[in-house]
Image (cartoon, rainbow, N blue to C red; front, top):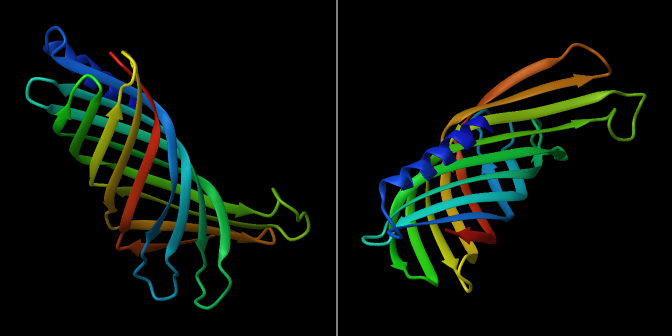
Length: 220
């Protein structure tokens, strides 16, 4: 969270270099729409990690009205439901957990009026997901079973953002990022019946990630 605040603060402070109304800011809060994502694994006895994610989305957009230069930052905090199993042909486990994405970048806005804004961006950031199942948390106090899976991946992406301002300061936004989770390591930790933990890992060759969101924003 500290990194997010530092990045957003730096973007906001950079606007002081532009005088008067030449630079417009939009700060938004919204909903990351449900979207699928898959991390493809290289190991033969590991299935792909398939996920559905949805949650809270935070946005910042700044634009230089004279020439359309624009910067954009977004972070979302989502619930992740994942299907995963190391035995091909077996029933997939249903794992629940947390996902967060952070992207920052710059681009150009061909449409930039008092009412409408539309910009394209090149973005860089990361994707973090941790999911798991714990029988102690659910319906079993006899056979203790725990299974946790997680990864951290570098995420380059392209983004398009649209903002409509029907009032002077109140706006509605829609945004979509399409990126690729770069190859990374997927970690897994298992424990059954209270025995020692088994830790394994597999190299992932990555996967496409789409992050759509809608919400409200404030212009200043």
